Image 1 (tube, rainbow, N blue to C red):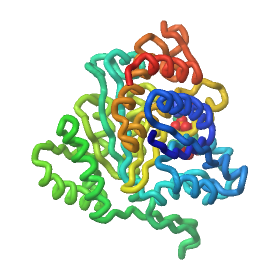
Image 2 (image 1 turned 30 degrees about the horizontal axis):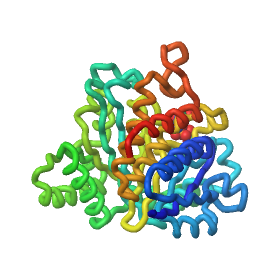
Image 3 (image 1 turned 45 degrees about the vertical axis):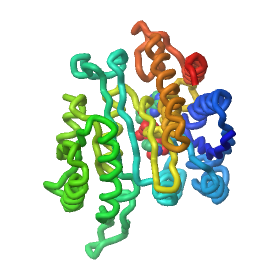
Length: 367
Ligand code: NAD
């Protein structure tokens, strides 16, 4: 029996609600396979700050250090509630970025996937969806503007100012480039490199290194596109994309647009990989507008579990089963409220209902 320790960071807002559904799946996977999951909940985010004075407490760091993988719920508060926490203790600055830095999780995989049969979830026309959307966004996760040096204060003219630095070195770019090319080799061998080299010098270096790495992957067709144009094409013709690679902030923004073209951020799971440790999280935030109502879509959280099964534990078949179980639930006409309007002919289900149906579908599939 293989034993894995998984740190569960429930997070804020809808985090604890969708974590419950992810745990149902982990328990069933353990029941069906020769594997034991030791699940250890730990405080993280605004809830941790209010409970013990820090959004990433020492005890949580210890649990994460000792875990084989980390499953993280979304963190954060509404803009108004955030003001109750000192700026450097607010969840992203005080917990999320330090988590990414601690485990150097530089490679963020954000699948944007919608089969043809679920085209009605998307705000795009059926002819644009065609045979379905299947994109892997690869976002560099520990560099760029989010991790650069920051300064603020009063300048020599007596005005408040702020300065943030966008920094990359070639080592950082090369390692994410390799991840993107390796991923392309396993898919359609078409890689869209997203940049802004007409304005940003960081993109000039980014493109130079991409071109150098491309030499080792002659089978992969590289298409370079400016990030602003990429945003347009994601709406007008998303099927042209297979793997897209980009720096940190571009990836943050374009992957949310990915959720938009699917119909909801609730369809956006993700994996954040470093060389030694990985953590898994929905791409979206804590959705304070719907927290506590049992209506959040747990697909993003359960999909993150599927990515963990494949990428951290090598359980590829069971990962496929989890994806299949979730797609089957939708294919039977069920929908969570984020994806459909009442009266649109779907069978509306809530957060717990979706988790229960996925469990029932997974039970039907051979291990
Ligand atoms: P958000 O992603 O929380 O929500 C945007 C919209 O998507 C909302 O209408 C929300 O209801 C909906 N949504 C998101 N996830 C959903 C789900 N699973 N099911 C159904 N609907 C869903 O973005 P926001 O409101 O701008 O941010 C809220 C908080 O989350 C902020 O504090 C922000 O800083 C934080 N945040 C955290 C992360 C993270 O933990 N990695 C990522 C993004 C934002």
